[in-house]
Image (cartoon, rainbow, N blue to C red; front, side, top):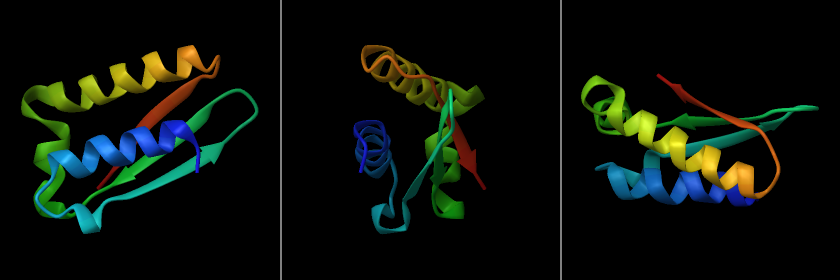
Amino acid sequence: MSELKDLIDTVSRALVDMPEQVEVNEIVGEQTTVIELKVDKTDLGKVIGKQGKTARALRTILNAASTKLKKRSVLEIIE
């Protein structure tokens, strides 16, 4: 498991009410890595946050970590 996937998994589980429902998939492309985050329907609002602030914060953390690893990554929140 990659460091970026672990990072999103850990932070997401801390945010939601049902951490056992959190699924994180990593799709590695040639230039960009896509991190897919899937949570329970009832926890979707917690991961996205008001006006998308929590989702934006998750993406900021992911970008900082991937910059350090000299990679490019994108966070997709799947409903």
